[in-house]
Image 1 (spheres, rainbow, N blue to C red):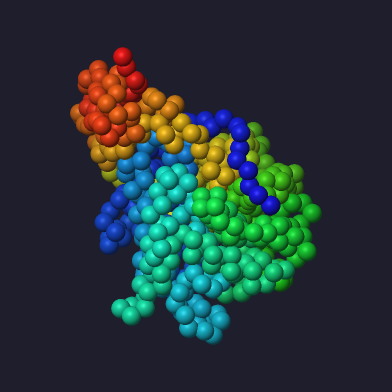
Image 2: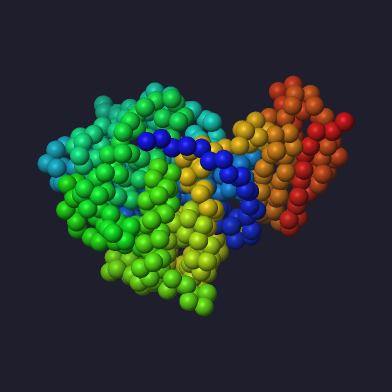
Length: 473
């Protein structure tokens, strides 16, 4: 089974003030020095409140915002995503697995990727695939570029391909039951979607065949092992051979409606229909109405039971946007804001009581659009975006980039001042060498690109500023 590129147009939206303030929350976490962890949630590292999920969903959300809002901006947006990936290699993020494997399987091996740990390996692989898809930056595909250092004598050497191959090997251990566990012996179908997307992206980017027939095997296992119900919804937790430990959950099914869409769009759509047709998710006079299972009432990212269904609502927002159900998406967005009042700090916005995992899920859904995850995994990046001019550097937080898109020759920007009105400079790349460009909205009216296709443009930022750079006579 292959994943094909979409032929549909690729729209670009503009981030509003709240979107930019939400981005600043993630930027403030990820742009600090790599050996500092100020602002990260610290509860424990074994469960769902761990650093790894905060890093996963922060990077995925920023990748989605880059795809749908600022495909022609790299700069600190890409630096933040890259830092999230590098932080995943920090020992404090993955060292939990040594104890978990010893207790769960009776074996000592701290390597968090080689065996039955999809909650680290699969999630990490998807980070790598989305980053490389958007930025054509192969640094994490260099052999040994992701070293996991346990102590002075032991380092587990990984890169994108070795991560993808480990996912394949784990899925092939039991050919008839390809989904593999997160916590010892526990399989979550939603987690396995990350692994499938990661392998598919590596194959597309590098011409490999790591995925092979695994998508077909997983599809068959959904039915033969009883993972999918007649309604189209998924049992959320079980054993590898199909013993069910938890029925459908809103977060799981909402996430599957997005994350399975790149590889099995018919099943992803059926999952969303199952949520809607069963009445588990409905809208009444503009208000979202949910039928929740017991586990849907807990925010697993911080174990909050007071208004703890924020994680379920965020997962549903992801699915609603991917499936194009704007009625539900809008109602969910409103409900999350109403139940988790915004808190502001230094221009950054977060939502009170919502875990970092839930907030990342919320942002991922908010910044998505119909079919966005399908298009990203398939690499449906217009050629104009890959070759046209880009905004390569801007000062953070002075310059907040609400929109950045190229038609292949011109660059259109919408910028907002993040630290009050000021004059600042923007560094551009991928201009035509030695070409003169006209500037609308800049301090000067024109600029000439260098022999390497670079230029620096000065702009005066106030509230909302439109800047256009286009070839001139």
